[in-house]
Image 1 (cartoon, helix red, strand yellow):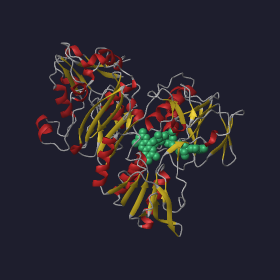
Image 2 (tube, rainbow over the protein chains, first blue to last red):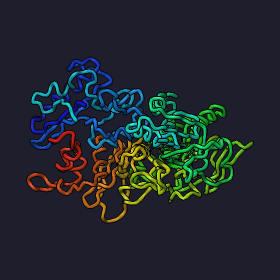
Image 3 (tube, each protein chain N blue to C red):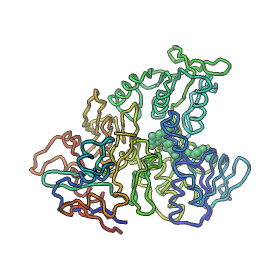
Image 4 (tube, each protein chain N blue to C red):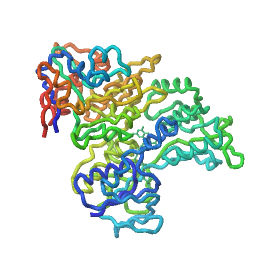
Length: 147
Length: 436
Ligand SMILES: Cc1cc2nc3c(=O)[nH]c(=O)nc-3n(C[C@H](O)[C@H](O)[C@H](O)COP(=O)(O)OP(=O)(O)OC[C@H]3O[C@@H](n4cnc5c(N)ncnc54)[C@H](O)[C@@H]3O)c2cc1C
């Protein structure tokens, strides 16, 4: 499957990926409205980690052997048959946060602005390239076929 | 190849999926004493509270069985195993032959042996039929006052549901606090305060000695201290134990549960075991232990399934952990949360007003336990460190060589993978992201 690769040495910590991820997952898809006027508040599903001069962007790794899939008590967390992406069915999710407990990358977060659901990277379902990758100015995250 | 699975829940379903990854044609039969398609036991409190609808309790889609070519035998109990002839005997005298058998019979509630415990209006809270019967009883008997015996996870989940239904509730717990096996005092206190706010009374260091009835229907309970609580409903939730009835009087080895080796095999060839009925490797005590939680039931079922299909995979071991929202407070606990001894180091952060509590238990620079309440973001990273027993000694120094406090290190807001030893980061993403 195609996965997002992290190139730590190219990351400048600009956090544009966070911005575009949030916009992509908003209703209006408009940067100003998404940040200022939307409710439920859209969330970014990518996080930029930073320590001194080091930084990298991190989102769900769509693990081959994903612990969140085993931990999910509702069956909401599932692997898409076609793309093999790990996705959360928000209708089924009850917000028990077992997935947050199970994910060793810490890339699933709570969305509590409406019905409580787990929020995570969905590889921008339907888009050719995930928004974070498309907008990274320095190719610090790339979208490539993985074996 | 004939695969037979006893138990249609977390472990049994996981086993089907992994068998089918490698064996598309073998015959799979699931035997279940329950009348339902597979559903999620942890969701019965949500159902009772009407937070989810009837269909949402299903764990896998209705067409799971058809898709995976599974013969599903419902409402049939396996009553005996014939190990020599490799057959399972059902309660209708039918014999089901197997080449590979998985025992995934789950847990069984423990009940106090007190007078009146069999009265109408006294329930356990372990499966869907319990939830349905409680729902019906509440409706038909206009229940206003309820008592829950047991302040463990299941008792508290039952309490959540009854609170949501506006039933006046008293929780009776033998220990001096709720959740005493997974939480420490501070964590328990946060939940106890929240229960009080939700008008749930709590009685600790006490238990029920008799269920009082009228026309064989409960109307009160008497406690050890002779006090009487009026009750139209009692939920008994003092614990569950592995359900190993089926293998008693066979040569299958048991302790509290059925003993599993690292391939989830029992001591008898071609017979596997998984889930709440088994004892498998516990990474913290380094012994075999029955740990009754959903993620391990799934993982064990999955590993059993692979091995049944001839794919050798090892069970990596597990440890107790749970994540649950109680009275609106998200909580995650894992491993040794309340250890005694000088070899442990505790790092914590406690803001009772905001119901925030975070605690990290270290032993020889490795995390062995955590509690997160109110603020659970990225808790999985810490739990991953418990699982992999990562030595963090190198992390407590900055690049310039000066050391910073462990509290500052673990509990600052920007703690993340970047804070961890480089090798662990590489290991985590190995095969996926080689560059980190
Ligand atoms: C109210 C409640 C809340 C919970 N909440 C959580 C939670 O939040 N997080 C968590 O991790 N865990 C939770 N758990 C625990 C979790 O549900 C169990 O760990 C999990 O269900 C174990 O799965 P299993 O497949 O081992 O067995 P079970 O789910 O117990 O299923 C066993 C099945 O086998 C059937 N069976 C047994 N004997 C026979 C027989 N002889 N013949 C035929 N069929 C038989 C039973 O009828 C049952 O259907 C909760 C449990 C309860 C009851």
